[in-house]
Structures are given as structure tokens and as C-alpha cells.
Length: 89
Length: 232
Image (tube, rainbow over all chains, first blue to last red; front, side, top):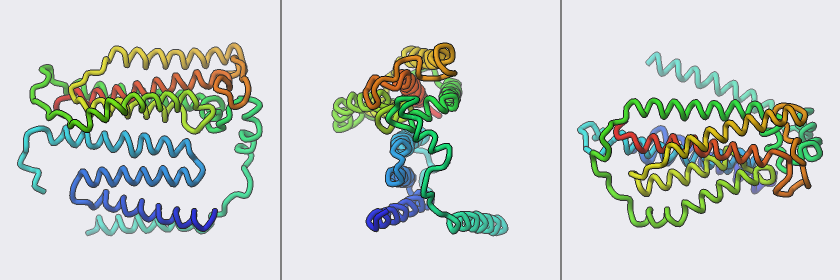
């Protein structure tokens, strides 16, 4: 692996850890969901670097695509149209 | 306090475990025995240019059948659970209409996304990707349609028909392999053709298309069930 690829891999790994940290400790739920999707997206790029394009496609389509939108979908459903009082935490 | 301490100890133990793994890691200089067999024999035996597909669909085809069954069960249970909580009267609260950008973008993108999904599973034996990936891409196209128009109703009859027929034909093709070729899910009862051509690798394109349709239908039906449930 060339020095460029190694640097890129390390940067991507750090970005992944940072995104995972934001997903767990973030204050707002939508940002946490987006960060979790970002973790999957970076993971799929890492799979591509590790020469596993099939796994990368699955991770990108399901991990960062479908799951992220599914979370948003459920988030919208759970909050509902009417404002309830317990949203100020 | 005790809880936090236990969690920290557990984390440290797992970290130490992975550290020893990492310290003892040496990249292999050559393929191991099983991988070497697949790399050497796939092209002439199976006729698929993508070795991963040959393993997933033929060498380990039974596992794939199991995975598809698990996905089917998951989608059935999601439908069952959501159907219990579904209210009878529809549209009791008006949803906000989707934005102009989303609706216009969907009209342009949804057919392209579906087409990409079909391309991915039809070319599963040549390029990276295959039934699961293509099915997931088709489902994300369906998701885009649902986002643009939350009141859209997918035909559940059509989805379940596609799903059931894909499942039945998958097993039938597996049985055909058992009777006409070497074993269950053997792809060689159809000619394997030239390596790298679209119509090659025997029954693999057929099987992967069925898997793609099945996975796409299952994931889409999950999303449609979620969308049609008023309150969770």
C-alpha cells in the first residue's frame, strides 16, 4: 500500500471515529442519525480501499442509505404532527 | 458508579483483546487453501467473472437461500406487527406536502435509481454487486417515491406476488440444478458461455435477478408498511 493510501486510510478511520462519537454524544437526534449514516459511508469507502467492492456496495446502499432514511422516517412518525410537551430535553 | 466501573473494565478487556490481535497481525503473502481453490477453479467451472458472485450464488448457494429466508421472515414480522397497530380510518391528519425540489427531483431520479438497481443485479456475475445490493438500491428508489408523496400506496398484491414467485423460482432453479447438473443450486444446467459475456455463467444471472427482485420487494414492502402506519 502506498504512503498516500495509508494516509487516506488513517484520515478516514479518524473521521469514522469522530462521526461515531458525534452519533453517540450529539445533542440533536437528526444530527446523530446523519453522523451514524456518515460512519457507514466512510466504512464503505474503507471497504473499497480494502478491495472489497461488493461489501462496499452493500454497506453504502443499506448502511448509509436505507437505514439513515428509515431512522428519519421513524423519527418523524414518533414525533407525530402534534407537539407534545416532552420535547424540550 | 459500580456500573460505570464495570463498563470501563469490560472496555479495557476488549481493548486488550483487540490489541493482542493487532500486534500479532501479519498480512498473508498468498491465498489460503480454500481461497486458492475458488480463485483457480471459478472461471472454468462456474464461468462467472466475479468470483464473489460465484461463491455467494453457487458454492455457498444454500447459505444465500437461508439469508433470503431470514430477510423474508423479518419483513413478514414487520408487516404483522405494524398491521396490528394500524388504524382503520386513513388520512386523519393532513401531512405537510413534500417540497417542490423533492417532488421534481424524485420524478427525475426514481426511474434512474430503479434502473441502476436492475443493472446491478443483472450484471452481478460480471461486476461487483448482485441481488442484495440491487434489491437494496431498488428499495431506496421506492423510499424516494414514498418521501415525495407520503400518501402514495404501493400495491401490496403486486409486491407479494413478485416476492413469492421470485422465492418459488429460486428453489425451482436450485432443484433443476440438482436433477440436471451436479447438485442443488448448481448453475451448469444452462451453458456457461464465454467468460465475461452478459449471458454466461449458466443460471447465475437468472438466480441473481430473482434474488434482486425478492430483496427489493421485501425491503419495499417493509417501507410501505411503515409509511402506511399512522402512529407507531
